[in-house]
Image (cartoon, rainbow, N blue to C red; front, side, top):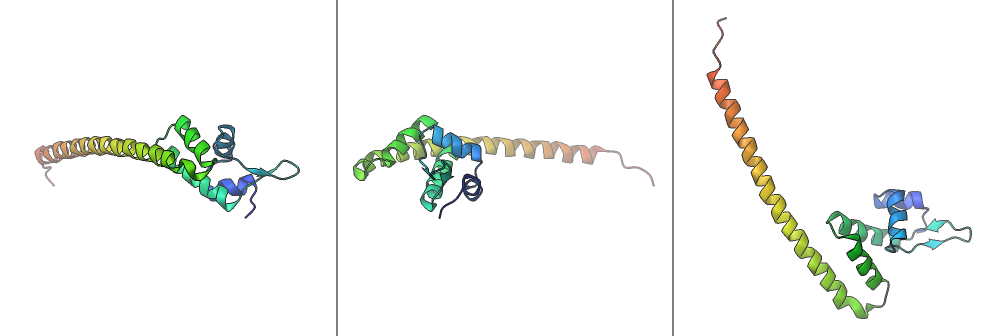
Length: 129
């Protein structure tokens, strides 16, 4: 696979701006043609998917840079990669607990207000037809 940036962005579900940003931040290294145009491989698309997942789950760019640097090296650093991902997983799980707690609070409020509305409906005077 040899894709131009617009096709790669479309397939990866990100913007061209995001791909430029990932490259500027050192998260993504992309091959270029002799004329300097970026060319994306299937491996690049897979890596963009990983970066997108990490970003969408709240991994800071600083940590993503650290992880990307390790991936760009040899496989002797896999234990460090695992450590980074396990630490991130714990943060994601904590965030999910917080979101679940807040969702329960919102659902409680919805139930409360629906109860208020139901009570108000019962108290409305019936019109005479």
